[in-house]
Length: 216
Picture (tube, rainbow, N blue to C red):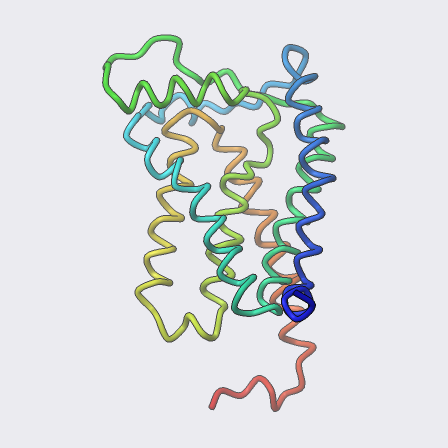
């Protein structure tokens, strides 16, 4: 047990959940009617496509598997990924607290009736249309894809890397096709991901000794 705890002592990072979850559920409970609407005319031109509930739902598995993979295989990459995630999630909490926001994009009626529409209905019941900027679905997806693409070990498995990019792209599209997020939320998440990438990956690379940057 001692060896196990010593090997996986970086699990302390998961304590962040004790900060994030209570704060998030507080916002979900209290930001319900009085909020700023995030909307753009481009949102109205994007069709509702219920089939995208599949990649949207796969997001949960994608993030969990990615975090779990780096947790058990590479502590350094794990710290980078979780730092990336925590920075974005903290900004999201602060922004949503200071600037309560939401959207009115969800359809009230559906043209089709199938299992995918039923799943979307369940999603709408479980998830409020508030606290949407920036989209964590998009931001965390980008964080996972970046971690996978930056992994030296996974560069030996290009199929995994390219598959993660395809899945990530579908997940990002799903947030708009399911009317869960505005285009503005997606762009905001992308901008934040670019900034965090510079802070966590580019800066860290520049700090490495020149010898350690050389590929063998």
